Every structure is written in structure tokens, then in C-alpha cells.
Image: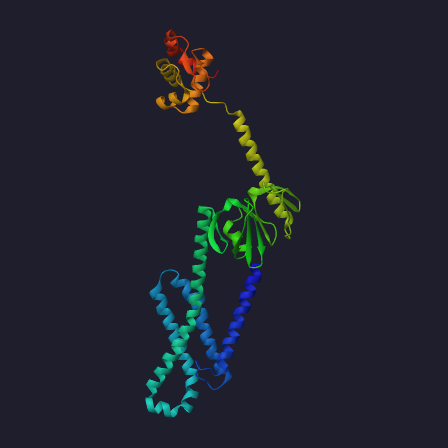
Length: 366
């Protein structure tokens, strides 16, 4: 594809050169007629040479390196040299037909007028590559900024009932190309349109979270359930009777299928590791000081509940519940009354010293 783009660019440049040379041989208004086609072509080649020297040599080597003054000086020098050579080619023929005009205004005035006219034309032509390159740089900068915004905010712009809005990138179920528009389907069973090609959307999203399986389809990895060779099966949504399945239609379908399967394996291993970690993780046990504080509070406030203990001791509800579980297991406290109105009480107030002494033992796993 890159080689094809280079070939197209070369052909376009050749076509532009031929058109410009033809323009010069037709005795155009911006060109003083030199008297023969060969001289006209030489004059045209001078202008082409100055344009491409500006585009490939002067501009990238000086202007892009912030040597702006030096760049404009070199460009002006190049323009004036080409204008002088241009007139040197054409003047012998011009002087024969404009002798009366030259005698009336004087040779220097006539030459200066023609010189500035040709130099202005050359400068105008040299602005074309300048503007094209500036536009290209601006477009690249904007696309770079857009990619940063999409990456950081995780939002994508869409058109909803002719109104512009943003939706989360994580809500995209799949993207479908249809002519000059891209249809975005979400997990909430909504469909939105977006101007532009699927290739542009793929560049914005990147290849980390999305994969393109055909010319018309772009899928997020997170909603792919499995891949059976040439078929990709999506996760079933609540509003679906059965999960969607798409065919991989690209020429490199084996490589795409392998990438999807590899990604699914990685996701499966992560899920298994998280599950095993949760199962192997033992519940934490409160320290002896926290158990002692909860016991003393219950002793001073018989009938208190977990919420009151948590509010006064500033321990979390889960910490208070673990302390109470440890105290109940050792027989230091008990719950009296109903579940709604009852509370915790110390079984025997004389056990306070034992609790204080054995709090370290209670804090160990039971």
C-alpha cells in the first residue's frame, strides 16, 4: 500500500510538471513569450526547479528548524534569480515587439516592471508547496491532539438525531462502515452515525482495544466471546435472543483469528488468576487494640449495635463485625433481644481484665 501511494504521488507530480510546461508554451498572460517552444520550456523548467527546491530543500531544512529569516532570505534570492534568468531568455524577443514601449518608458523602468511581475509570479508559485506542507503539518498535529483526547477521555463523538454528542468508548458493541458514514452500535441497543471512514476510526481507537475483521467491521476485544476460525462470536447482550456472529473477510484472516484467540487466552488467564486470588485470600483479623476498644464500648453501653459502635470508635463496619465475631467466639459478649431492636452485652463484667489480657490471642485467626 505504501509503494502504491508513492507511485501515485510521483505520477501526480509528473502530471503537474507537464501541465505547467504546457501552460508556458501557450503564451499565457503570466508568461512573457520567448519566441520559441524550447525557450518557453526552459523558462518553465526554471520555475519548476525553484518550486521543488523550495519544497524539498529550503523549507524542511530551514523553516522547520525555526530559521525563518534565513529561509525567507534564501527563498527571495531563489525567486529573483529565476526571474532574472527568465527575463534573460525572453527579453531578446520581447525587445523586438515592444521597442516603442521600451523607448517611451525607458529600458530600466520596463525591465524593472517586467522583473517584479515575473518575480511576483514565481513567489506565488512557491507559496503552493509552502501552504500544502503547512496544511499537512496542521492536519497531523490536529490528528495527534484528537488521538490524545480520545485516549484520555475515552469518549467518541457521534451524531444523534442531527445533534453532536459524546458517548463512552467502552459502550461500543461494534462499528459498521456504510459508504461515507460509519454506524456505531452500542451495548444499550442504540445506533449512531459518524461521518468518516472506518479506517479513520480505527486509527483513533488504536489496535490495542479494537480489531478490524473486514472492510466494513471494527470490533472491540472486550465484547468478543470466542473465535472459531473464520467466525467471531460476540458476547450476548440482554436485549438479544442469541449472540451476534461475524465472518472474518480480510485476506489475512488467519492472522486476525490468531490475534483474537491470543487476546482471549490472555483475558482468560487474568480472570482465572483473579478468581484464584480471591479464593486463596484469607479474611483479615482485627488487632488486639481494636477488639479491646469494641469490648470496652459494649461494656459501657449495653445493648449497643454495630452502627453505633462504628460511629463512636470510628472503625469501619466490617472491622466492628470482625471484632464482635471474635468476642462472641470467645464467649465474652452475646446478642440479646430481636434482630431489629436488640444489641450486644458483656456476658460477665468481671471478664474485662481477661479481655485486656487475651486481646492479643483473640486477634489471631480462629
